[in-house]
Length: 206
Image (spheres, rainbow, N blue to C red):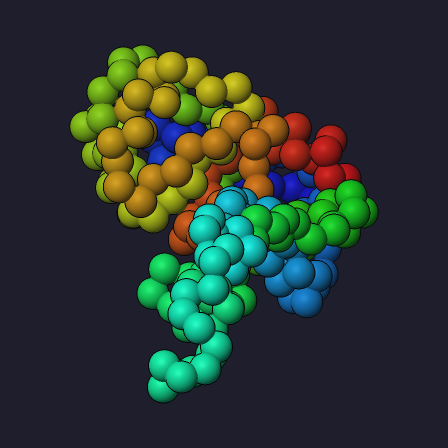
């Protein structure tokens, strides 16, 4: 299929580029995309929460008071869950939240997302991000002129000027083609991708 390549600075159509239908014309598999997105978000969880059970709390070796005659409920330790300095009944433990997603499933989900972005006219292809100076205002004005307020910029090879120009812009993301992920693609209203990044993704997911 042929995609229109726009001039990023002028905002006008410049040329066309041919891409594989396998990578950019796939059917949308909602259940697969949901599974991959959930797995990606789960893998980002730290899972370092930890609490102490009654066996982890120090002390409590001596019986706090005699078994009978005190009028209180019998107790053998001061580290039980009912005591103020005791352990937690169902204590949290460090755990791994990662879910298995094989390479075939991940590639199919990414093809599905990219194809759906094209069908919804949320994916734009540009020639290059010609950012000569690390200034935020010129890039912000350029994005505003093209009505791109919530946008992800994807380049084949990030430059320092582009990084410095975008880092203070709200609702503007920046990734290179090798770091792209399903959550970032779906989190923004529009995705603006250079022709170089497009070719890298085609080789990766076709």
